[in-house]
Length: 351
Image (cartoon, rainbow, N blue to C red; front, top):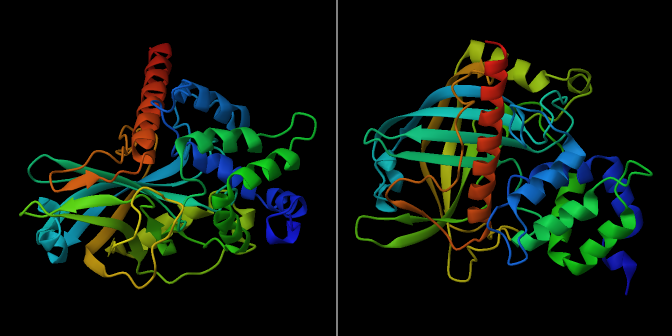
């Protein structure tokens, strides 16, 4: 086999040194599930593996532990109402409670530690229904099956003898799962931004929009920023809270905005594989603008007790056949139950 045609061991070591392997570890919990396999690969086992890397921080999310709450509105322009009967896409405003975060299980980590960030949103419709979504600032996911999540976690755990991932194990994983190669290639060349405000956040998974006639439309979506991109600077790398401080400063100057853009699948586009990006020429629809105008600390903040389960969807939206969606939902529930129980214990201890 021509090693140069693949991600070789030397390249994998370099990726680990620049933080790509920790990035993979941090991202995996976002997608891990509890129903998982006939071999009983449970969410408990996955959490235990993750905690070997990130540690246990009671009262916090098991991943994306460090974040900040944001408040605002979604202003629909009505363009997506032809695709979905959900009232959120009719012309008008919907209240939004959101959260920005960095990947990883350590709430004290520096903001520059992991390049991939997340935006989670909860839209409260006037009829009482909600739409919740968790998005990430990356174009696609490393692997396509639930089983491979656990294998990648095991392959990237630090070796106790060196404190670094074992390149032999990771190399073997890549040879078994070549679908991971595009993600490694993207991660190697990716330059993080200097602000959450300029990040583009993507759903990664596909969903279905259902119109008033019952027709289904396979889509993915993105929050596309109005703020111009600027790369992570050397000064940012000296400030462990630069993302949160930047966001607070920008909101003091005025609201921040993103456009909600749906990408429509065409024949042949797969809805069950988050590793495959759809072609760039697919039709898009701008559904409206997210306007954020306030930030608050996450602990005791309005976003702290929200489970941003991607399967909390209003009438007019539905999951695709991507098996990872059920896995995400299960993992979110497990994390939510753990941290809220721990928070209750901590509150009781201070009575």
